[in-house]
Length: 170
Image 1 (cartoon, rainbow, N blue to C red):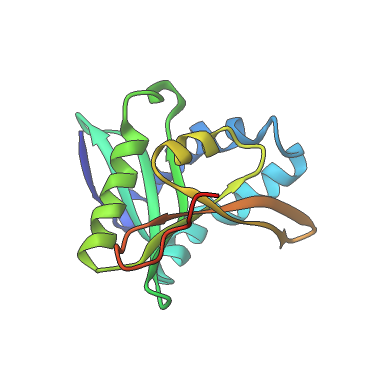
Image 2 (image 1 turned 120 degrees about the horizontal axis):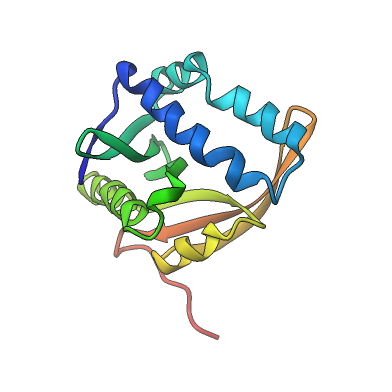
């Protein structure tokens, strides 16, 4: 498996993964109307191009020229890295692709001496257990307006810098 930075000509490949995963992931959690609204606002050619132009770096994982998944990240001014998106094609779940993508972003965070990695996950999304297994911890619970809808998320963080204080067990 190979991970590389995605370029503008890779946008259709990103959309291919999103089409295979996004609606299926959120069907048990959100209304079809909300799924369609959010998908259209995030996964058109224009939307992904705008995300790239606004500082999102996309990495794609492929094998034998077949795209298996992608992740996007943003370096933030608070000395952290944010992961807005990570999706792996459903037929490749369990093969370590999500883990490889997260580890690649973690390497970038370490190289840049960042303090932590942060991502949001819907409170009903079973992927939360995968993130916890990967070392992420609950930071806060948020409700974010998107159009007339709400994203009910957990913000998860993974500490990178050894200089940050760790939480004491109680």
